[in-house]
Image 1 (cartoon, rainbow, N blue to C red):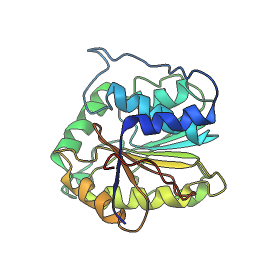
Image 2: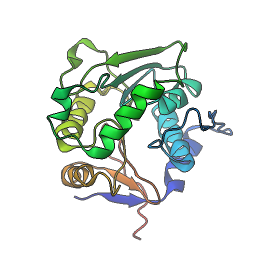
Image 3: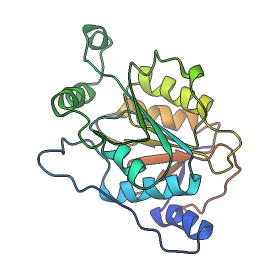
Length: 226
């Protein structure tokens, strides 16, 4: 078993099969006051939307709030309760862990800009905590889980393990998705996803930095290699 490569249209076809209607995505267009880099591209946001719609979530969990752009995407395109966790203050303890330099810069930008996309919105529970230290046993289960927090192995690995723990096992379409696969900035994340794809079905969407899994079903999506 290894990482499976698919084209974006395969993901969009998932919701074409699930719904006999047009799918419309609400999107906040970034501007110079709110965009600080590091967020998914427009194509990636459309794919995230499709995966989320396929999961038909009652609850969504997000690792890595950042400025809240993806959180806002979840909020504006679903009625789900959304939980989002972010590191909060950049402490010396965090710096001592030798966090990836690119992540450090993003944390600094977050502290300067704040989660300005989600201020005042309902249905969002924001958790300020080191995601590797949080007690997930106090949470309900989730239908869609988005992993885009720390990209080093000592963060990405426990975030992924916790994601699988809190995933709703009763929803056949429940989804776990990762951002920044194959990014030049985060080789550890890419290596880790390649490794775990040896014993579970994980799909990489070509032309993006997105990977996803549908752990509750034996899925056979058309590969771009054939």
